Length: 418
Image (cartoon, rainbow, N blue to C red; front, side, top):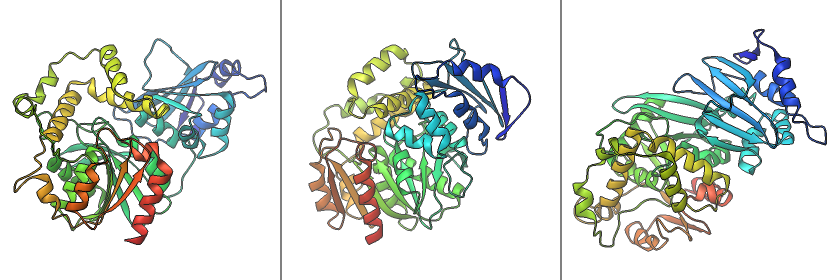
């Protein structure tokens, strides 16, 4: 076993045991991952990673080879042979050459993940947190994970990068997590401070039972998170449900809300909702007692979610299941989904009526292949908000993941020109 404390190698354990174990995976070209993984561990910075339980088991696998476990507890990291009988919080898999490239380039881990050479399963919060904590980066604005202690909404998990004069707060969709905005953080952190939140009820954030989980409640949680960050004002980017929350934030407090960057935002239905009476009658708290065997739930989710996004799809399913398979996570999911379906379109307090009073500069990014929020909604937004700008992309419901280059170029251009 090899132990590291605050990024410095310690003396309690046998490095040769683990390295010798990994050396057996050397490729025919002579590239061995042992030294690379040891270098990653030696760069471990406990101030970058945020582990809700204070500890984690991170499995590091070599494609067609062996694996080791990085055991993080408090400020210490220990490498040891993989215990295949123990569940890992996150599993990182790459070939030997990629592990070497990751170790040589301080930013190589995230680049390899985005390029698909590195596969992460289980908790993206833990897996990407490990990459950030072993990157060796120490400059201001490096990628970091943290937990905000907010007033009224409990602990809200976040990741952030960048030190720009303006801040962009990113909000994920229903069943998603802050990890869905990793491409946005990477693309925009050179010029902006970019913060991605796990909304309450999702990811690593608290999941209060009986909370409203409606757009207004979520918007208030965002302002509470901004208070904890010391932010008076921020642009807000939101995908799907997060887009609906961003719009609500702009309607609720114009002074604190900058530009709205709305990526396939959830909008109130304009067609008939035949299931509305039944949905109103059902209580989301039923999720607390609903059986949810993982094999059955996972099979259902895989049938519903398209596989066009490759590794991102598998990672996204893992993120969804981690919350949904908990009692409080199921209740939060049902409550949020119920509120999306029941969002009233018309009347004095109806969404589309109120939308006409939105004063924030707004960019809408639409996916031409989006089946959840069809691009046909654009004409309704154009009527309600004539000054809003629109971008159409050949993608589905998650533009920042499916078409990151075009999405983030549009955001940069819009913020520069507004």
